[in-house]
Image 1 (spheres, rainbow, N blue to C red):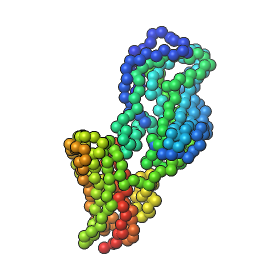
Image 2: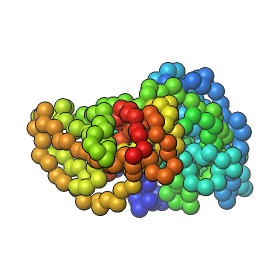
Image 3: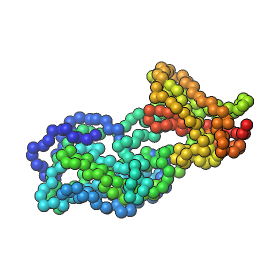
Image 4: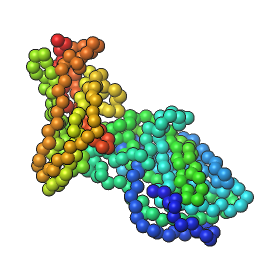
Length: 338
């Protein structure tokens, strides 16, 4: 949460920072086991970025072990001018962006200011909380400022999770200041990141609800495939839940089981159900144990189309939600071209 609009300080202060707390607010901020050794620093970690009389630098390291591994990015500001530099800032002023390209071109693959917790986490509705306060500091010529507000840790599991593949990522940092333009695109090095993940699950818990995909079924003549998902309220005595009015689930077919089990980060499926859906939602009041069924049916000839051969296929379904889609494994079946 930025602190623009807060009252300005009329007096200059020394390097010892002055804090004024004015409340608490929520920030929509920024994924399992990591294999990179703890404490490994990103290469080119101290590349600098200049803005007016301030020279910004950033470092990236991977800290912790096992499930506690986190990305730790720290930024500093050095006054390279001839006069004291007065700055104002608060909490949540540091944003991390991760790119696939060394030159950090294109859209970031991940960013802390737009990411959300894992969709199947029971804490998926809880976002980081930032204190709303203003800190004012004067940096003397030649001095370096590295306050705690310029450091940020993000769990590795929250970055990679299900959506991003293992690989090398290139980081940059943005610093928001209250009385100056933001300093953007500070290079912060790169890291090779990897997580040994479990195969795609058939059941996940999201926001008090357990979503379970049933094995696909092929029946009829001509043959059609039926995919089903149940949504059961397991973790509350009652709740008002919303589900898509139409197209609640989409079906995906893979010729390779490994690719299905690593969906969606494995890339496009061999076949994806084409859907034209509205954004309308249906609200359902559920009691503990209540189940809401969802399904889709597709002719086998539509799945195989003109290019896919008859054979054994592995299936996944994706549930549309207001946040991230929820991917579930939905069994396997033999498909035969009519």
